[in-house]
Image (cartoon, rainbow, N blue to C red; front, side, top):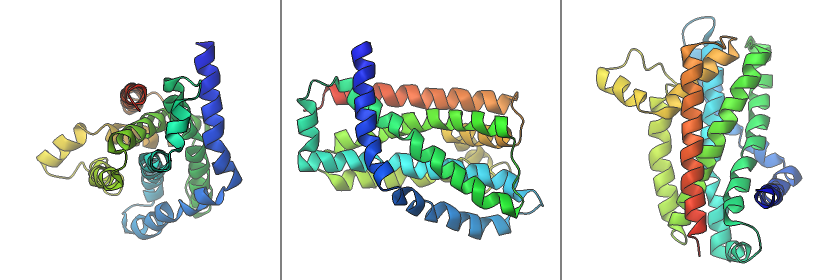
Length: 245
């Protein structure tokens, strides 16, 4: 276990170093969420539209960023870097877990930037609830990042396969989570699909937590959904990494 933790820390540092050296990538990734904020928020009715919309946008930025991280591993596979990592003494699970944990740092930075931009426009948040919400979101990011790496390992040299699957899944997950528009007033079949989407529970939990409603059923459901995604992602990712050649 000590070796696994040490190896995970080594991989985590290796993956995080390029992000710290070039933080502009985090800022550039904020363009899309900010565009959604600027174009969709004014269309929402009510004076508290930002209270409903901003937590969802934070989850959306996490979804976009974490789901695309497998492309970095795909690039390493194509250039032979991943093959060289496999023959090092590092444990195979650490190669996946360290990468997945790295997703937490950009997520925190993106969430802080979104909140900082929205506060002058009237967005209010509960600090304790927001911090707890970021922990829930970090758990979800780990699982989603691990699933993205799993997809990259499955795609290997077929880059088109990775992007086809990623782009095919990401927007249905986003829309069925009710990030941009409420699902409650939709038809029955749409609400049924939303209930099967784990992201919808995470979004509801973030809205409750950022507004200070910590002890609610939405929060519990979001924690369970995030933990389930993390467990599934790490299990699938570690399994794929052990079989990687």
